[in-house]
Amino acid sequence: MVPIFQNLDPRPGENTFSQTLTIKSGYSRETNVASELHTKIAAKVEASMKIFVASVSGRVSSEVSAALSKSIAISNTAEREQTQTINLDLTQPVYVYQIQYSSTLADGSALDCWGSGLVVSANPI
Image 1 (cartoon, rainbow, N blue to C red):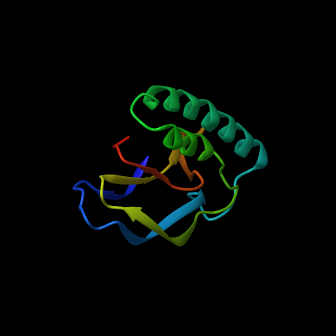
Image 2 (image 1 turned 90 degrees about the vertical axis):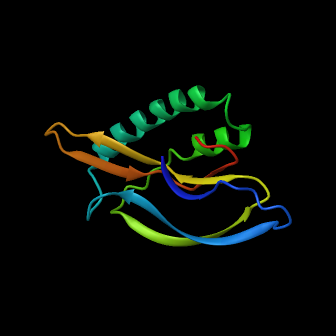
Image 3 (image 1 turned 45 degrees about the vertical axis):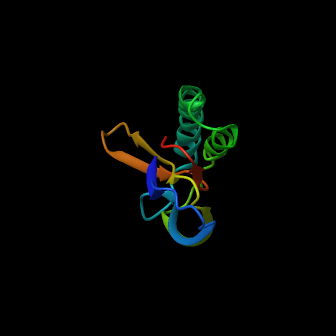
């Protein structure tokens, strides 16, 4: 999980804050990956996220658990960046994450990819 924004100190009286964030999608390379490799990575990502969600479910809300579970969708594209503006409630601590997965290929090289969407939590994950 890659932290994108954190507000550790609640700000009473300040309800919302608009924040423009840069989020990524796809694989950390200039082209997509072979479809068979993408299928294998997607299966491993789904299995590892189920284990991760089970390990943090007692510390995070059900909404955060659901957002984590939904983050497993990976686009089979070259890495892309886009900006997104979100409104955050600053009356409590807030943490914003994007999910990044890393795989080691048969040749020993690493291949990173980005999960879909953002995960917003009142607690650190």
